Amino acid sequence: QRVGPGGVVTLQVAGVKGVPATGVTAVVMNVTAVHPTEAGHVTVYPNGQAAPGVSNLNFTPGQIVPNLVTVPVVNGKVDLRN
Image (cartoon, rainbow, N blue to C red):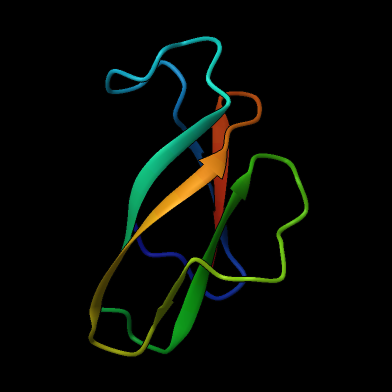
């Protein structure tokens, strides 16, 4: 899913793809930029919280860049901000 600058995507993780539906406090996930059209960064953080001032993934146009991220889970979700 393409997400423009400043865009936020909320990802349900609890109860999805083998993750327990309850009791989840954090997840480890692979976050990948695939052929972005401009340089940017992605920040992964707990759902509904303020985005921290650091990024988890930095990229330039045309790259494929993965990064393994550990993030706290709130409300069964995490947020990703471009």
